[in-house]
Image 1 (spheres, rainbow, N blue to C red):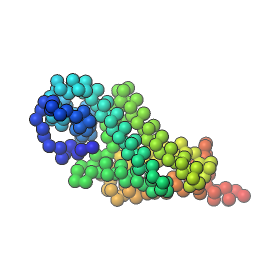
Image 2 (tube, rainbow, N blue to C red):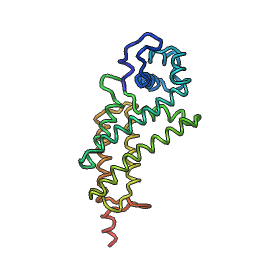
Image 3 (cartoon, rainbow, N blue to C red):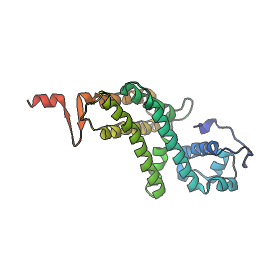
Image 4 (tube, helix red, strand yellow):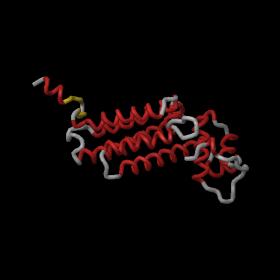
Length: 227
């Protein structure tokens, strides 16, 4: 996605070579900066280079445009995660690759920290907007599924214990992603966030020695102490 701080201003009006994805990218940047409520139609017109009639014709009203940006962001995010997790590398490396990719997005070089678009904007609106709440829930679950698929593969390869609860570990992996999103927006440094991610990866991948099993969590050392 393009950083709104680097986007060149374009004359308003729908260009002949209209590109819906390009316009959605610029609209995403605008919403990312100001949030849904704080982003005016004028700001969206400036960001996309389209006047209001053109915006309405292409995407519907502001609400419909925002929903489209959420859909686009989640789809792109899931695709990026799947690519990062797809290679035949250890789970530790695959997870760290996801978090490094997220940090590159949350902390753009030369730009202001912006965190995650979905969490940073949709969480606020989800309280009063059912459509946004639905997309927020679906997006989070989509990220969970991407993590779970890769974690199950690691379990099948013997990297994790057979009794490890892959669904729980996937939600832990997502929780780390959420923390990076929030803390990057709050001003934490890239180095500290990467260290947090690395510790999270160690926790998840240490499930060989710390079994996360359905309904409980028991370490081998704790089992041994009871013998």
